[in-house]
Length: 420
Image 1 (cartoon, rainbow, N blue to C red):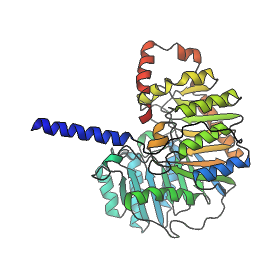
Image 2: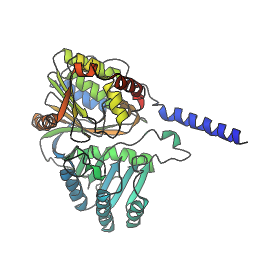
Image 3: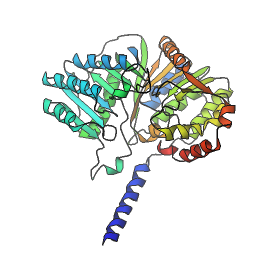
Image 4: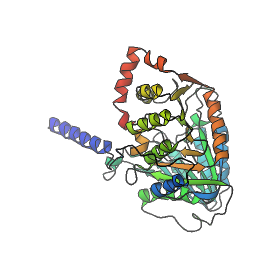
């Protein structure tokens, strides 16, 4: 009897594993033809037509570097909420910053603000239950995305990795940070990560809110709408922007497509900050083609201080062809590098939750903000170059001469790249 039970359990595990590892949709299989450059109006039209929402004008996007600037801005916005707060995040752990966010959300809910929080079940696993209980008691509506059940167990491998905060439908935040103490500080040591987040006002905030609603409906079956969530938004600045999303349940290739479009259209430069850089074959081919036509490509990834060593090994296994083509790859040294920013031709800036890997391109629910503005892009290049000064460049010769043991471990890690 025990043998039958164990056999049945093993079969169930295998079935669920197969279901979890399946992306479900047809993937992009061929390189994109180079039909336009980033400065061509057709590039802007294609971004809007192929990714969903159009680029809209009149926005103001402010960069926030590291927790000392990110968390105060987010908490100030929450504490100033008058009608609604919608908040979606992958990581929410217990700790001092988790407590601060909980207290701010509780206070607003008790004051009559409608507060809706969507947490990924996997990413928020380290969150203490008492924080959730306190918030719910105060009136905060909390949902867990893809919490295991008889219906959703096969979707456990599909996580919401989106980082979205929208206050009164008028102020939005997105970027790389989760709610955990490792993001506090100013990247001053190994215990305080380097990351970037963005504060957004203007018409594009309605698109950010719509992305939140996408997963809120999936989790609850309910639509939040009306003026409290989608007010009329006036121009706040001069940035042309677009917020778009991707998900395995619909449009899983949108994020992958955006990166391929941007790399293919690049004329002069690509600066990529990537916490987890494990590119697929099409992306590698697009980067090599860009480098060969004279595009300067610089990439910063984490060095030895990383929270997922298997990702670093899988990444390094693929660097050879990129380095041979002239792509510059550097590893950030002081602490974990968690930034997710791409700057193309000092014109297009794409920021948000997306990592440069298969998990973000095809398995997770992700969201990115695209900003087309040369002044804004130049500011991001300055930040990139400051990070570059704290990074160590890896040459082709260094990569080729790494120890045999490293090469073997990297090759083994690369076998898992479709799940990283």
